[in-house]
Image 1 (cartoon, rainbow, N blue to C red):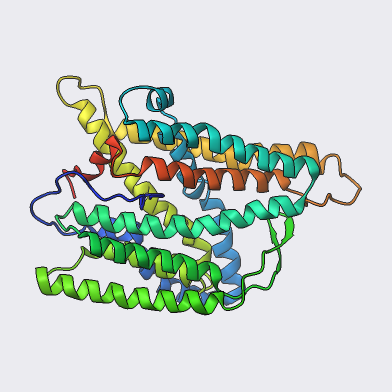
Image 2: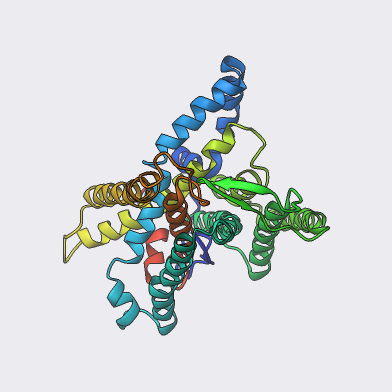
Length: 385
């Protein structure tokens, strides 16, 4: 989330609980801490199966698990964003700035993306679609680190820990520096790459970019350490364990050093998606609890979560599996039977859907997960934490 995905400048403007409470084991695991527990599992798999066999089975598991974790995490954003879209964009419930953002991201952004991928497909331009793929990769780092920032802010606030303006700036600075360093490293003079069957040449990085970004990341790390030490000296407390783990894991392991373990790299998208879905669950559960109370008694938290989950799984499969597979089979592979595949490869529609959904997801998160959004108050209601 953030000024993008939960990280969307989620600085709470609501009152947090007066007394801090310990993070649950589940919260710690699903918001990032579980990544640490997976390292010994990955090492054991490599030792027992060998690297090649372990990569095959973990990759296969990650591919199929995406239907229940990764794909629904994209789809649920659409369900949240477009629920009562007319009222959000044109009604009087939201402030003018929020209505404007809903209109631009709900109508303008998908139109621009549709024109972009549609033009690339119509002209069979691997270069054009490759540029959009690279935009997706550039934004995904922003998405990951800002979601990590949101995890830190929200979980801290739920336990009564706040951050001053200077502290928030240092935290965000570390996020941005990690994002920049991850994108700049390794140095790239223009590499031939393939994504979803589309071959393209990446844009070259300016000379020295990796070094400059690395220095900035190191400096931001020292600043972060200093801020945490000062917080400990002043308040005799640090951020809650789950909050700090989610923040650091999102930046250091999921974004910057993704190749610390070759097996773990396969499951990072699923771990990120679980982190996201945890907060969607909090939001939906507390909305249902409020609706279930007097005077309406309309909601049922478990039923509402079940319906949302089932809808997200179905929409995720349709948008990232079913629809692109049908179009590629009918319009590309069918017409190319017995002939050379087109310049865009065998699955251009899959690439187009992946690019469209990913980039639009980042923009929708920017609108949903903001501190001034009325629904954000539900993240700080907690009867069970």
